Image (tube, rainbow, N blue to C red; front, side):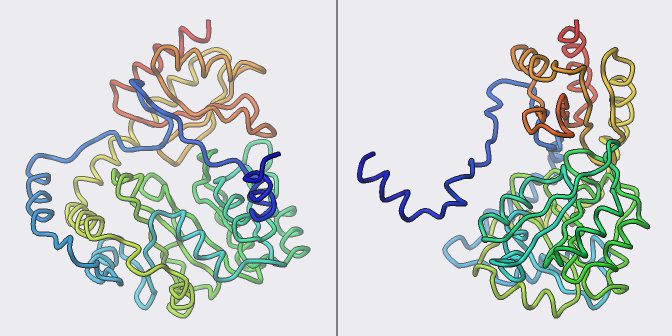
Length: 361
């Protein structure tokens, strides 16, 4: 072992050395259906307006640290409840990190049902917290008795509930979520990253609880490249979390571009409606295939299970034919034999189904 390795082993925290970096697949020339992205672009007139705005951006100056104009646009566009604070992050990931830096840490616990968004677990490790995962039922619904027992035992500082859940796509039963909120001693974060595609939200319930925050992102609405997430909740909580936010974390171009996009929310809403319709059609086509089990989704992706031991082969066969979807089977457990496909345009969905049919034979 050389000196460099010795020094790394000496100084890098053991829990970090045990982790693997988050892997993002190279799409190359594939049809890219692995990352829950909106496949649609903007109309020409909207693009021209945006170009004019970016030309006048003062790139030599630091951005507004509070992103005041953008915050007001978010309030208006998404009808956030009166009196609630808003915190912006460089994607939801940064917000998760800020939450854990604020209330978690050594000797404190973060809890979530599993399988769910992997960053809850990963970032809890970064911040030295203990992560407790409570298995979902076989149909990926919440196991309420198990969740309540884990909350009672571990007294978590943070409970994350993805609503709808990623990677399963389902919306947990509202009454169960309400019981979890009421039972939790610390903060409850309703991660509504896929709210644009879902039939329910807790945004308008924020004033009913003093420990509930709602987290969202604009990524799934067609703005993934801008990396903007936002957290809404009681102002005293937002003020405390804001203390660990890095100055100027939302850059000038992101502030200008998201503000512009949300002023054209009708365009994004129409695209979301198209994808929601395509989700139903794609789900039906998947259900018609032999050897495939499809799970209900209220997001812009569909989780499906292959016959035992076939997921890796099918994933590679799709990749060989230039179709990239997400292989969740290596995670094991409840996700064994599972693949996840992003809902895309009618043409890309058709190509995916045609190629998948050849891979199943």
